[in-house]
Image 1 (tube, rainbow, N blue to C red):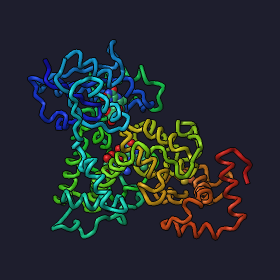
Image 2 (image 1 turned 45 degrees about the horizontal axis):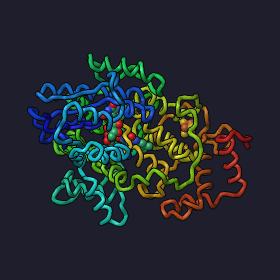
Image 3 (image 1 turned 90 degrees about the horizontal axis):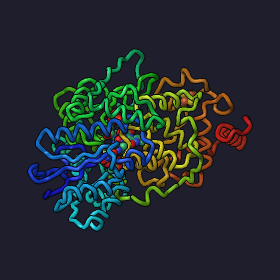
Image 4 (image 1 turned 135 degrees about the vertical axis):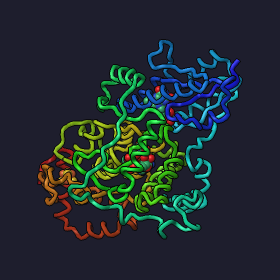
Length: 510
Ligand code: FAD
Ligand code: DLZ
Ligand code: SF4
């Protein structure tokens, strides 16, 4: 009889996972299942499915090599029921374990499922905290209770103090908590970007690629050119490459965008962090070490650590403290359908076609593309939050609801009324022009503010402010911009509204 059945999910591929911490290879069995419910609850980008299935199969192999018995159910196994709960029930019948151990999942819908397992299976089920994060769900809830604002900045500083990361004698290294001022440079002409590491598919990955090509070829996204790391060893190589070749320059150009440059100096590590091939602790510690060793400047290392120790932990905390109601809010009452260009329909907006094209090719776009181009457009156009959330969950290799939802619902769409960020990141075309070279080759004119030829971001920006004046007009962080809006004449406002209507609804052009 099996002592313990240990259920490991596709985003829990970490040898030090809490569910595996006291694993006894003589008495226990690890269960891993590829199920249709997970491959299809949204229409994931084919590269995301291939990454997860291949990484799962490699992880199972690594455990087996260490003498662990792994019961692995493949997607095309004939008796596969395609659900986590039913596969667990089948495995219980096969192995008759005394108990089940799992680690808490990343998504609310799976958490709800797990909570029924004990009564459904009539067996002790232990669900352990996911200690791959710096801040546990309980700790976060307490921290937010103690602090009235519940803002990322407060949380981040507290996490720096607690971890000692980039701290010197109790004070932040360099005498400041952030160096954002240094991190908003646009790319100088001729600056070379590093050649990014890609990993050649081995036999396991090739088999998965064939499976994914056969089953999911109608999902948005290219599968050819798949080059993600699928093992911990490969992910560590990718991390070393980033630390050496990209981190020193990461800070300076963190917010920059360039035509044809899909990655710039970004980490390309979020999928590995999110499925467990890398841990947040090791990534932050190695980055801090690069600063200590004089291999990367403080503005770069702080900017990078802030993303992981700050934002990544913060959005997870928000997700678990606010769900399940979080997803229901729609503060700005946005209702528009997601435009077809998000699925690749032709657009003359160079910025949108660049970011969506990169997404299709790579299952990746960097932060500022997600926030200030595709996100900004959805905000300004008033896209219904559920539709744009689903898009982000589908198209990125790193997309899991705990991290995607707060970023989209909160940071981008302000649908939570300001729980995550105090104001929406709305911006006109001039921001995109400052941070990229997209506008140089765009058919639209950045200089024109309204009319058919004008950059849509220009009039959509002001139209957004007009339409949401009752909800955002007294937001103290938007005082300056509403001051400018209030100086506009009635005729100017009308022209803006007419251009926005013509663009979004196909009305007459002014
Ligand atoms: P880098 O720029 O090198 O940053 C380093 C790491 O910091 C990332 O790997 C990531 O783990 C973390 N990070 C940075 N920003 C954030 C953030 N805002 N929230 C959480 N972690 C962050 N990230 C996801 O992992 N999954 C998502 O589904 C996701 N959806 C997003 C949707 C929108 C609309 C926006 C604006 C951001 C989203 N992000 C998401 C955050 C961020 O864009 C990605 O983590 C980042 O682009 C991943 O690329 P990288 O590894 O090259 O990141
Ligand atoms: C995303 C994903 C996919 C595509 N497929 C599987 C799978 O077949 N088996 C599995 O265990 N996990 C998969 N995952 C990841 C899960 O969706 C993820 O573990 C849950 O969403 C909880 O975060
Ligand atoms: Fe985008 Fe406007 Fe620039 Fe064109 S002009 S690339 S639409 S910001």
